[in-house]
Image (cartoon, rainbow, N blue to C red):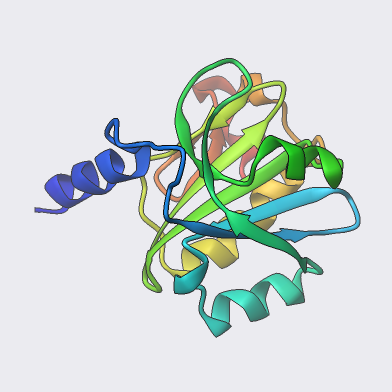
Length: 168
């Protein structure tokens, strides 16, 4: 049952070919002083605990608007996020995209111009977000290169030969 639900959520996450110019989704962008971003959609499902968590890691509400379907920098994967013009306006190169299904079921994507858009299939609750967002920020800061990491369930680990030194 869990695998079926994960598959259905992944199909929903990837858009299943239903992207249109008017997504119907609103996004909320949060940004920190390092120019890293967190894009949340649908904005209407944002909840207090997640917003308070963003404040605790020094991310400020920046802009909101109509979410658009975008691909990664290498044409891979796709999801709803902020428009490219907004990304450029705030000089954001690296960011996370969080899709809220329910407060206890969220998906997270990671965008970096070097590695493109990564969309792990794992579904996270609030505790998973509190664990993984700081780890992803550490990766953004250069702690581990993209060539050495991949998502494994709810954590970032290195290729098998480097797993121990890369655990966060």
